[in-house]
Image (tube, rainbow, N blue to C red; front, side, top):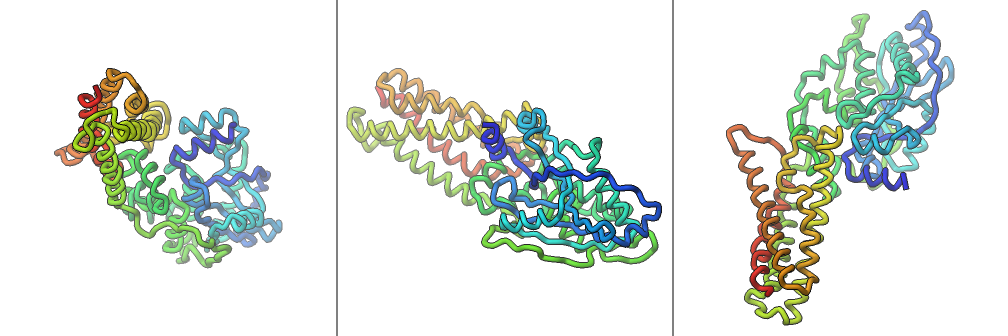
Length: 439
């Protein structure tokens, strides 16, 4: 039951790069007196992992591989590990307060896992001075200590990728941040997310719907490196002058360890469109309009006792209940994340103006419209649906006005508007007509 709840939460709350569970720790190594001598035995690689099958794997993963010729070890350091056994894990996860950990395991285990799960795996060997490699090893091992291994995960600000990014910056004496900390990024956070969801229309729409205007602000390249693939991209472009005054390319070698087969890859450009949502919204609106008009007896039928009119009413009422169920649930989740959780990427979300828990009222109203034999109940239900869909339509229009106002509310919510406005508009007139036709 716990695992079912966990997967339910994962599918309804936006997650970032992946968390592989390898319950193994290592003791902190002794600090050598001569870091340069120690570093001569080390090879440091960034391991960038591609998307996986499940939704919470779509943004990839990352770790550091450190090969130590002195000890004969080849370790994969992973900052994206969680445990189901953590106290209050499920509650903390649902409320946006999950705790993740750093662990290390033999790199061969990780390679075998990613090959078996058909995921890309690329190693970027870093050109670092021996002393910097030794310090990086010590930093990675220090992250395994009980007092340092656990941290509060954040989807954009503190995850497996940002932890690796920060260690790379330490290894270069802060030069990595100097190169990218203020440089403007290619895309916003939302656009990066949609690059990885383009192949799934439903999740592309739902995740974009739940994310608020906070992720539509311009960001830096440094902030873009919340994604593992962005770290690999920027490491390739990066060169620096080390502490000895030597010019170095950050990446000295690239190894393609595994290539996925027939897996959708992240798009080079983000999906900006809303046309497909508009087309779907219009199709649903036309279908609802036709059935609603038939149910109300306008033009097509004039008497409720006609069998076709009864069938149309039941189809229309059931459709209203289904719309209330779907949009009410996604609206409730948005309300819940805004009010009760620390999922700050959902905050300041203008979609809550017109899609929220109030839409759950369409469920009983639709059922009454479809199946009640009491005319007065059907009239009240139709009135409620009229008010509800009028509110949704006007709320959506209001968000457009606010977007165009002198002090604009800037949020890329066109997909939500494109789907919802045609449906709401098409429901207003049939629901209003049902009040007078069903007597």
